[in-house]
Image (tube, rainbow, N blue to C red):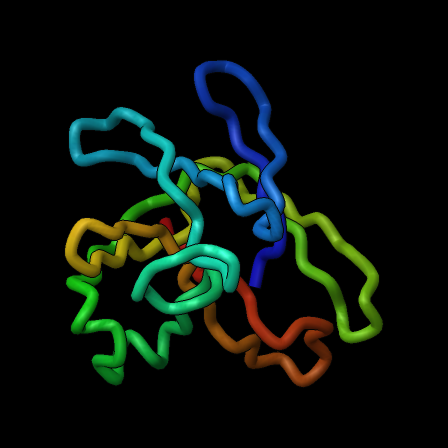
Length: 135
């Protein structure tokens, strides 16, 4: 579950950590533009959308996000940071041309963006979740 990401927006590099309640992520719109959206929801933030900044792929397939009118989106992120089982941070590059999958969720006027995650299949993986990366 990426705890931080790096991305370019209007030719400037941003590093964003989920713990920041003002965290925004880039979304590629259907017309090819990039817009920034609120990343998830934290305990200190009012609202009815799920807590956290991640949506597990299995929970999406099970329909657990259906009540929030989920919309899949592409996130033009260049790097993401995960902490391993021992708490050490590791930054990973996203191969150019690939995207991190996001999910826009909505409850009335409340809208947030979540990073879609998967469970790594390798027994040697040092993380419990990983962002879903697509071509």
